[in-house]
Each structure stands twice: as structure tokens, then as C-alpha cells.
Amino acid sequence: ELMHSLTPSEARVVDDEQVREVPVAALLPGMLLDVRAGDKLAADGMVERGVSSMDLSLLSGESRPVTVREGDLVYAGTVNLGAPLRVRVTAAGESSRLAGILRDVEQGA
Image (cartoon, rainbow, N blue to C red; front, side, top):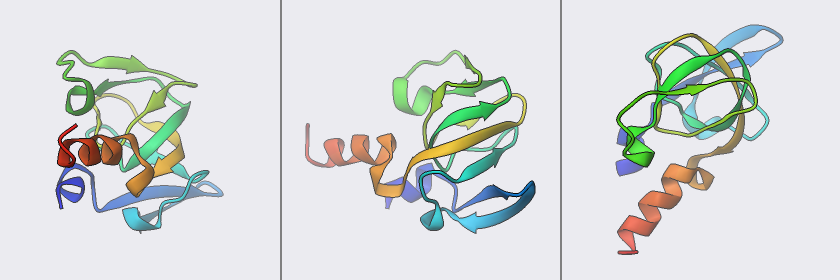
């Protein structure tokens, strides 16, 4: 499925400052993700800590990196180009923005 090729199969979840890898299918809203430089985002979320640049070209077609900081929304399938971020999951899997776009494309919207 296209969604799986555009997002990672696992994500790093932070629990009491312990970081563990979990399957992307297990992600739920409210979980805190550890997103490192070079990581592709596994879910939609809000940046809770850090400032970095993101490659949003998959979603927006925008080729220039976009700076994100605390309070900014970030989306599944985009790539963290700079510094580490902590991202609070707002939507995962089929409820992510990327999944919605893919559904629209499949339906010929």
C-alpha cells in the first residue's frame, strides 16, 4: 500500500524520558514521538520541543525546507532535516492528513 511506502514502519515513542521503538500501527493521539534528523514522520502531530527544518514537499510540493518550532503542526510523510524534535501525535494511520490525501487521489478527486 502506498501509505506504507511513504511513512516509516516504526516510530520512537517517549515514555517517562525512555525512548522505545513501536510499530507505526500502534501509534495513538497523545503519544510523544522522538523525531531525529533524517527521520520521516510517522504521524501527524504538534511540535512540543525543538526547532528544525522540515521537507514538506510530499504534501505541499514546496521544495524549500520549512522551519518548525514549538506549537507548529507537522505531518506524516514529511522529513525532519535538522535538529531533534519532540512531537505530540494528533492523528495517526488512516486519520492522518497523508492518508486523507491518498484517499482523495484514489477516488479521483
